[in-house]
Image (cartoon, rainbow, N blue to C red; front, side, top):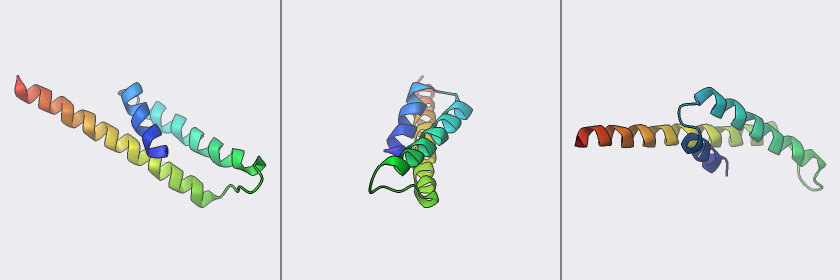
Length: 77
């Protein structure tokens, strides 16, 4: 889910790297903190780190794919 959120933000807000990282970091933290009020769920730092890693991986993969696609478009001309 976090990887997909990272990809969605890259495609939805291209070029806004700081916005993507800050917003998705807050999203990941909010998801973990909200679990404190759900019976049977827990908020752990390790879960936040795993979610944050997924977000960063999604952002990096999204940027690489758009950069690769952009480069391919320029090579064809």
